[in-house]
Image (cartoon, rainbow, N blue to C red; front, top):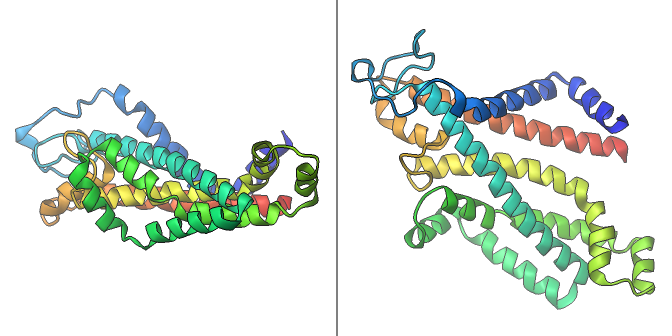
Length: 276
């Protein structure tokens, strides 16, 4: 209970944090209830093509007369799904590489860190274009690409923390009494790096959503009939003059999500520093 009270106090201590939490909870709720709303995402209405916001269509309609509100909600679902799954993937890989590299050191550390340096030096756009030749563009591919090639900064961060933690007395003693390396990493090292990992994971969600939006905008991400916030922006390019709301609305949602996740990451970091 004390921990929960601290979190609530920290959220309420700043209007920015309160706003960010409310925005994210609101967007997550909308994404969850989207399939249960009585609006057909695929219903065409040729008499209302590219119409602006109104009482019947609060976000207007797209170039085919489909309700834009429900399309934005489904795009939000996909973008959040990509963000969370890519975060889990990159955090998992980065944590394992960082723990192994930092704990064992020596040759293993040198090999893994050089591998990280090589991957970090490759521009992500070039990497995605190359991968798109071998993998069919879509939801699974975008998660693999973002999650599988955005873990390097997490690995470096966890490695640095591990190098420091493994010098502490309780870890040295655990080695002295011949506790296995795997148990030391799981029971002693991992819990100690968890605060840093949580902050890194929160930041990686916003980065994944931003990357997905950029890739979908370039036509390398989510493909029709599935939609994401980035693909909605891509489709809106040809309608910027006649229907600017088609770009403004999903663009604003992306900005709010990234802004909110970054603020929550800062809030968690601030909370952990207070505990220290």
